Length: 179
Image (cartoon, rainbow, N blue to C red):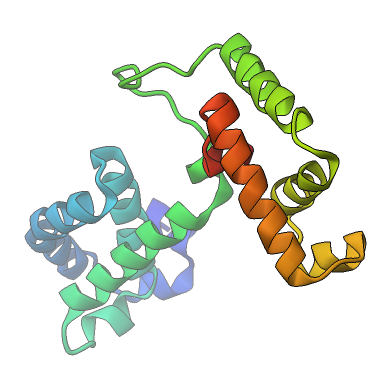
């Protein structure tokens, strides 16, 4: 029993290894270019191709009898790349050869910005402050804020508008600073 039969099981035993080898050699360059273009990374393309060819070998009889065996394997490669990108480990930070284009701002700068925003919010009249906090920090809708404050939606809108105008004048803040 050869290593391929041990790895892929008895179905692989009835396939023609020579047939598969010829298919592999003929299709690898084209599928590799496609995989590289889709994955955007040579190593990821090689991993996807390895998995795809392993699956194709395991069911070589079905692949060989398909109308277009190369298209069949191409679809396996693309599915492998797409499913790999969906996995959590792919989305984690990975090392690269080059550092990022720009560094992250120091934590002190973020704390200082947060403090600046809070000081500006605390300088607002209480009603305006309540509307801003409920809208941008609690993420409530105008209707929900009106219910909490016991006023109309129109009052919430006017208070929010006045509060944002005061914040822009007071500390050169934008709506994005509040979120």
